[in-house]
Image (tube, rainbow, N blue to C red; front, side, top):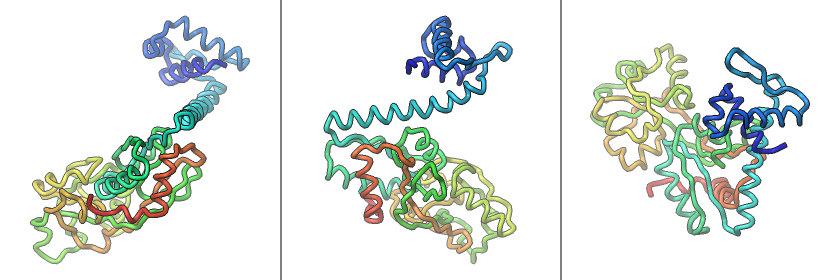
Length: 300
């Protein structure tokens, strides 16, 4: 079986249209037809069937699509491992970090790694935990740093440190003019991450558990820690890590809204795909985080 045929097959299966696949792959339709014929001859069965003007996978085709993605990922990991070994270099780290902690965790962590291995390189992706998990699952990242992910056989997650997420507002926000009740939070608008993010899920469920409507979201953003000016100017409430409020260089105009009910206690962890290959550099970062993760907290 030719690996190029498998690559062509995946594109055709994704698009469900031979002509569009030919355009995307810059190949002729007859060439793609022959490619599919070779695969069908190798497996002894049809992989596609007609569905009007489109084509769709047969049950065997669906099985090959699932196995093909795993095979392509395995091949990519093998190529990286061989390159690392052949070059003698320490390698490249592809790491994702939750936006709420990137500013106070990553500077010291990357500095410590570079002191040990000056030639390593980084691909650093900042985002919310839902997008980071997708990138980890697809093999685009080696490890991610975000809320601990328990009870999932596809990933392995190691605890690093404990933190808390709290409600925040401008120091001059009117909510501080009187004793604060949780119901007071419903009187103002919010800037929050998407509903697929774990901290947003927790906050919404906490409001519901206390018999309150969900926060009124005026702005939905995937990097709340980068929006302090907007929070101040719009008199908005938000929800982020207490360490971000303490160590973040742009957080001086904000303060915590102290409420026990809306203080989320959580464990931050480093997560990898179970059984995946890690370059020497990625393995070194994983080990440093497991052994001394809390030492890297603080302003850079």
